[in-house]
Image (cartoon, rainbow, N blue to C red):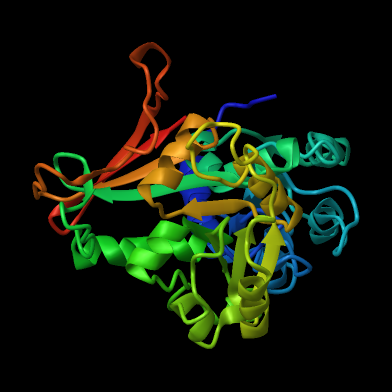
Length: 379
């Protein structure tokens, strides 16, 4: 059920959405949710879900309000309040106990355990409920959680950086840096929001990336983002930055039975988690095609670990394989105003596509960072 909202509802729901963004990357396996409490047209308090096991956004906002201020007030929340007991008590009970008169929500919870039940409980107790306010604006924050509860898989965001003519490396293989510092800062924000950042072995060898979160809020302490390299053959040495920077406990290596035992032991000795993932096809079954990990199996393992948002940062072969498998939910393409010309490596040159069946996306936004443009597309 969706009710008609007004301009005030839109204004305050956007405040709740901004509050929800503060929790991105720290709430797995829960979604980032924000709430604001408003009375007589004035903001009383605000709150967001910080981490799993902690107070939900509604409870945090109510707790931040002065005693008795919630009675007769309106609570704006980006997701339907829960009505069942998990690590914390039901939010509906806290809302009723506080005397809130009206609840305005952006989205209905798609978790079958909760969907619609919170709204029904509030209405049964006489609370006015308005649904669907700024639903399209709130949904991007919630989609990773919704996908996870529906499928057990994380939302996959593929980030690539290319030249105007679609190159990710020049004729000599150099790829640092195609884009400018402003774009790289935005990539840092993308990493902060992700639960795991993953790359192929080729990118790990060529760029020796860190893949770590930078400048995360204190609330994130103890819940670092994970980083993962896909290395079926054990090509990446234990001297790589992801093993040797003092944070190897954040590193996952997804490998295969073809990986030498000595290499696997060296990764583990450095402190990394080593996951054995099935091969997409047995050796020799596809002619001269090199061994590759089963990406469906990898994403299932990410889902089992509770990862809601998985950010892939390439390279071209892995990006093409994800596209070919239909596993990319969102494409973030940074385009720099430069031309790399003949011999450059293509952004998605790892797999050929036929025009009638080629992967297609719908535009989802354009932003500018310095001289570069970020083009977003969704499946």
